[in-house]
Length: 270
Image (cartoon, rainbow, N blue to C red):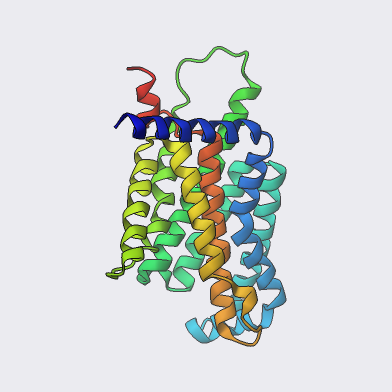
């Protein structure tokens, strides 16, 4: 038991060292990973303009004008929102735009009735909430000399909601198979999901999830190995960049910490 506690303490120390040494780079990497799915989809709207327009027209029978408007909104909204997030310009407005795009696509592509895609979109919304929480941290630091009446409650609840939503990505990775490796993957993944959700050993758990999700993403969603003429390439690319965005959200958790509503924060008061 003592050996396990020492091993866990050592692992936490390593995680803290990684965070400290990368504190100037980590937020930038997190934001870039997070907006990657919007960036890729915005560029796809540009390069596949006719295909996207024709697909919407055929799916909804909405006509040439509305189908074109849908593609245009997605293109401008996603690329504009990405630029605003990366430049940290009006981040709250950028997150609202990207949130609108997620909801719009959920309805337009009938994702609401597809459990796996719905869970991933909810995870994406969670990642956006963490970007919004980071922008509130920055705003607070600018006014560091101004007396505060209490905790930054909106930031705290944004972190909590973002943390809870982001683990939905891992629900889609669970498989009801009886193979030994799949059972281990399900058990370990579920434990890490719970730890991140309740905010216990958060930085260590989130870092392990980042590593694990990267391995799974590059193994299962290797879209670059599929010829460009095969439809599977687009499906894998979509999954790859959505997963990369959730990885960005987890890196944001590592950078910001779990927030006030977490076991890690309450442990400090014990």
